[in-house]
Length: 265
Image 1 (spheres, rainbow, N blue to C red):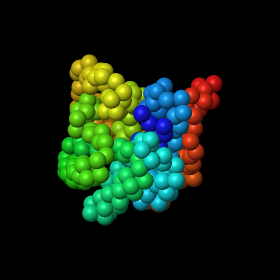
Image 2: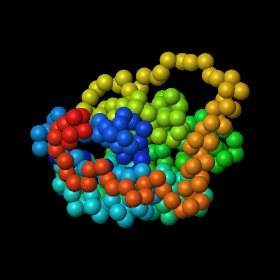
Image 3: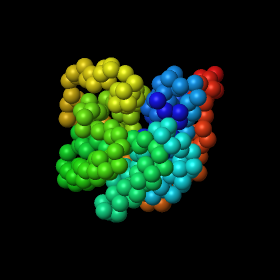
Image 4: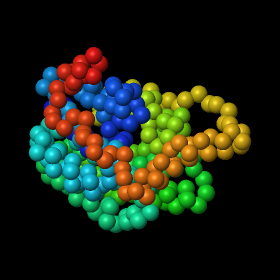
């Protein structure tokens, strides 16, 4: 099994909206996977360079070079989830983004890492022209992710194979980030993908519920837009990001049993 786990990416990999160790410091699926891997290897170390709000070129520029210096050839698992924030930008250029993505995966692979990639959820309940346009963009991006995974023999955690993530109840109130149950399911799915367990309980759907009526749905949409969408748009207008000025959670190799004790105390 692996001696080191290195995580690159954005808010998904930083762990936003999972349980909090301290205010604004979240656990996340990656920490959960690290806990699992640490039980199998007393020499195991964990690095998490992911920062919320980062675009693909920022991950490639700031996180990738650090990761390349920390890879133990043949003994390192690297999680690479980047490009999702780019997909939400109006000037998204598919060929440019996918080529940068491919180059990043190539560098990690050539350095001797086992690389784990992720597709994005193509549609999570949205309807209308904008939702259709974004779904088509997400689908095109996913094709590129799968092609990179195949070409470089990388692992891929494919959202299309986890249909339960179409259920909004696995997401935080912001409708963008996983909630604690969502992070738990992703961590369990990855453990299954890595062959750490045969348990497929992560596939189990939540109990069926009666959907809200139209009035309640509209009211919920208005509240969501006021609390989450408008602040996000305001940051875009000002050229700001939620990750501005933030540092990675674990920029250097950490023996995770020790790290967990620090956070749990």
